[in-house]
Image 1 (cartoon, rainbow, N blue to C red):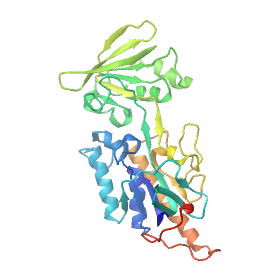
Image 2 (tube, rainbow, N blue to C red; image 1 turned 45 degrees about the horizontal axis):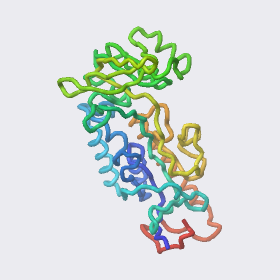
Image 3 (cartoon, rainbow, N blue to C red; image 1 turned 120 degrees about the horizontal axis):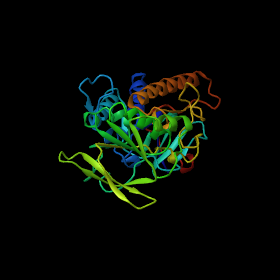
Image 4 (cartoon, rainbow, N blue to C red; image 1 turned 180 degrees about the vertical axis):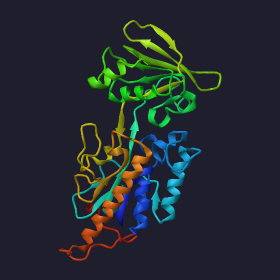
Length: 349
């Protein structure tokens, strides 16, 4: 037997998209529940913002705000309007979109059904691991980052040499962007040619402030007298030669991994694993299921754009619910959106 809880709107996620959706649906009196996960994707509830320090490009905070503090405020605002938040992960393969209600199993004895579902599980920037690259004893957020747009304008990078790791369009775009702030930008690429599109590669190669280190990998990051990133040790994979590269910033630009594995193929995904949504919409391939934030956005990936799509998803979910409530029930009254229901048979989830 599985205890089942029903809700009109269920939200999965913990970042700006999820909490914007929560605020909008809660204020619409849809009594949403939100599952923020417990160290989902290896990141604390709040998503990638919790791994950043100063956030200076989110409106309303002229002095900037710490990423962790901003996510705490998101959560408090969701709770203020009545969102019920659970720190529980949604297990792999437990979603079921085939019935009249969306459903998934959270544990062996507890499940949820919902009239609509908003997925805002985000995407995690791929990072390389080498001595000095991490949070503990390393220089993550102290010179090493995975988002040039988010962090590139920070004072520690201005008029200083910066390095970008990668060879695709993202690396070209980030390197070009960083030339606005850095004195010089190195692109460190492990091969002798880029995977990037020709136009993006040409733009980077012709930029006077960009230098490419071909056939190269970073072996180690080291600090300076201020405890910030001071440089990296770069290895030529052809000759084996190791040399120092003094830089104040190192940016990973090797792609992102959308958090969609738990869906087990029940929604249409693109070749990179992002949820496919309809044009100018957050609607997915399953009616009543909406996607917001970085889990469906592989281009912008900003907190403010994620919040915008969270708003869109909430409004679309509200319209979906209203439209279906207006339809006559062919099989009798639909189960009310109560806080909890009587136990149901295990086969129903």
